[in-house]
Length: 203
Length: 293
Image (tube, rainbow over all chains, first blue to last red; front, top):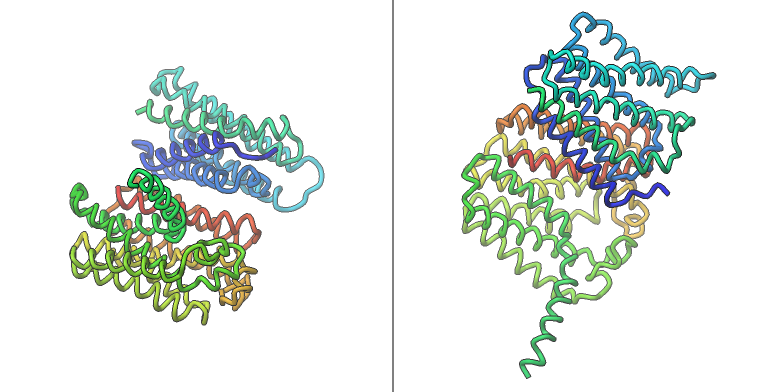
């Protein structure tokens, strides 16, 4: 049921290559922190894509998946906030670090109640909304080229992917496992393509 | 008469090629070949000199294939005892040992001879790689000590050093750093393999790190060697003058290698072990491609 098809591998390879391209070209004019944040995000995407190709969908059974899938939206959103919302840099940096640590702690130790799921939903929700809304609002205001809105489209897709994966791992799947695994490679590729195109069109 | 025998000889040739092809371990040979090409191109020499590139490729292919066949010839008895390798053409008796020995010697001689004709230093390093691989690693040490992999590693590092030496006409510290990158990468590759096929190596009586020092120590060695491989590659890439973007990509790929090595150490499992084994090959190939660009 979890068998990866050649098409899945091809889509994941394309995702990895796009992420590698983005890491290599970087994003022009950014200061050190956004560059590091974007490199982490696309770097994790690249390595995760390669590991999925090597190990198959069974790799998703690892308890580390929830933590790793949190790094991508948090680092991307941190890069965006640092670049465009100077007044919120400190607050968002704190949120990113604290949110990541909270996910690590709630996933590493057995905690009663709904706390782990709530932490996950808050962290993914906020990061996802930042990546989705900020580029679209900036493009609508005309403060960045219109093509930058594609980063927001990528944000919507990463939000969907992140939530699907995280809730699947948390034991409360939104869609069936089969359906999620069917959608995941294409979703990852579309998401990465939207980010890469958005950053390229913003130049 | 000619009409009758021509298709027959083509069929025979095809079946011979099909039989002999596994003897050269095409993936391993391809990976070592890529390190040699990367070493050459890292010297920023005129890579569009197609003649030199073709000769480099041919000499490396011949000498690596030749030494691999000689190793297979020497190890055919232990290959026959291991489930993973018992279907190999020599181990299963599909190829006469003397025939494989002749082929291995011919290819090795051609490869080293061609290399020496191109450049004396290049030829010497290629010969050293072949000597360390066949004589020191396989014939002398492989059945005696698990530390034989150090010599296997040194021979594996020779193609990249040779390629760099051919490009520069001399040895330099970058070539040594590149060679160290491969040397330290090899335990990551081989030790994950020897853990996966632990029972096979035990059955054949070949000493390995897991059988000599245990799995925990082996995992620690894998982690340390991965760190050293990543550092050596990074230093060499910096020395070559790799652009910031590609350097960033190399750091990301190295980060993946280190994360997996840490996972093998901290959360050991068959799957993580296999993941590191496969990822290490991809890492080396990617690093070599980045060195070439």
